[in-house]
Length: 99
Image (cartoon, rainbow, N blue to C red; front, top):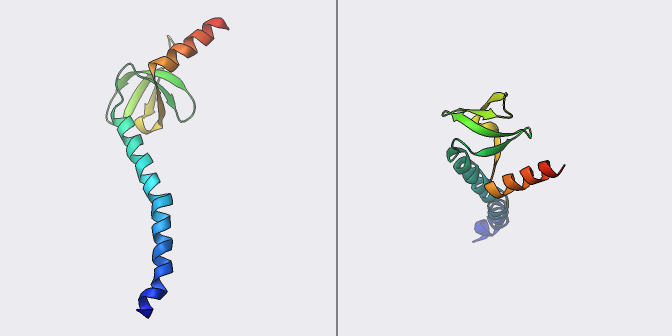
């Protein structure tokens, strides 16, 4: 019993670390992997560097983004930070037209 009492604080600290640090990080990683695997042609995305574009072509590890009418850039698939849903894209277009 005395041995267990000595390890109880250590076990509690590990449990707190697991639920506050490790588990949320694993959940975020799963969500990011699901987002990256669900990419498709025509999606509007934002890269980690903040570049906005539309996916023209994609392979297992690379995507080609159309930035404007004449510019196409190739990125690693992991460089995508977020997919912009259609509502956000239409709001941005309205703001650009108003400017």
